[in-house]
Image 1 (cartoon, one colour):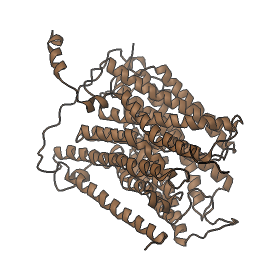
Image 2 (cartoon, rainbow over the protein chains, first blue to last red; image 1 turned 45 degrees about the vertical axis):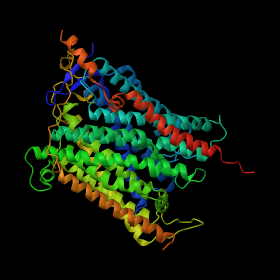
Image 3 (cartoon, one colour; image 1 turned 135 degrees about the horizontal axis):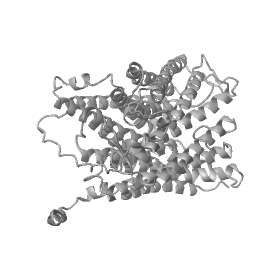
Image 4 (cartoon, helix red, strand yellow; image 1 turned 90 degrees about the vertical axis):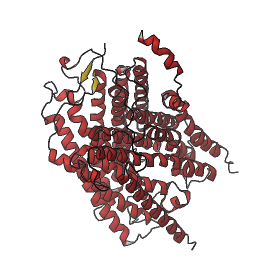
Length: 575
Length: 55
């Protein structure tokens, strides 16, 4: 008989097995965030040419581990937790096949440790992309394959839980929007993992000598089905968290469920095709393939992000105005709870993802202007805006909510928690903006030495490029401090925070269930369908402040897009 | 008793096609995997495969 715990503060229902899996996945994810953060500091201090901390071999090893630990292991472990919350907790149902949930966890653990061991043994410094013909140790690929199989199992446990919920009629009507966003993330994950299997299994066989040759271009196309789509899982997941936080903090409801769901549907159709922008300067594939997958399909996915970027703050504005914060255009925003890290983290995530990650992503997805910045440090700047200040900050924000609700511990160091999103978001934004500038000047993406010391064909970057890399690295150090503050507050809370439930001990923070008396076999109440939205006056804007913000985004985009085309013309030079 | 009296009303209520699509995660899964498989992977792989081998 399934057992559930009801959170006394929020009324959320936690299935016992799901609760343990959510905790275990989230905690292991945080461990990989710690490892990735330490490595980020080493990488940053090496790319800061005045310090140039690591020798070349250690730099490439650290960069490989940083990429994989941050972009894959931290985020996908946390996303497993998100999938279980979005299915079992939000739909008030038992988790399908908890046994397979633990298989997911075990495989991902073994895989992630195995790949890290391979990297730190020193023979697998092939970067996250691991382009052939560079060859890593066999257990580098095997670890990634095991991790991917584990994640795939997690996705199907999620889909199975949706079936259980529908079968046992635990909710009325359609699944909530946040769950629908998680469905989108899981669908993208299935394609991502399938692409990974298609290319990593033969690459593993090649590494043990069973296959003699892997075509480099074939590898690149299929690998980016894994490499870029894995970041699209993040987009769907963190957008779902934005909606969740808007609901939790403000009681906000989407301005239009239909429009928001349609936007997620655009993600399902088109988001994964954006992988093609990595291949825009590759020979061998036609312009038709490049243009369709980027300049057409990708823009429809960008449209979806713009819809979410409008409806999430729009729903907050509507909720705030309904509470009487109607003065001027931005009273609703000015009087938002900026000292609540759940809100501030989410809002900084939204702004940096839209203004920096979104706009630079469109620039990179345009075949012509991509030529200016392809394979420069502009590329990591873009994906740090989407995945670090976008996804990671959103995940940090929801973690602050989960500590008392899921882990039943009171948060320690609330003062540090208040400033943490600003420290992390601010530091990373400095890093990103200055890397964008340096990338536009051609600073290479991964090269250990900006001076090209001893290279047969050297290149002198202008002095300002060095300055930009230095300022960016300074921002990176602040960002790492922000990440450390997050881990200090959250892990410290799990270890030393006041217990909100007497049985919430140390082991319970890592997945062991609370005392038996906390759970009951009583079925949770059915999740009711939300009442229809009240009829609003259609003659005026419901969310004028958000409309102004959207116009600001549009103007920023137009100006930046124009600058890049103008720059392209001067590079070639055509005018 | 209530259930039986409600049944005809429920039958009358037609679910829009878009709603049916959005409520079917497995159909969405199929579309979400098929689209990039066809337009990104298969199309891309075919282009690589058809590159003539250098003499």
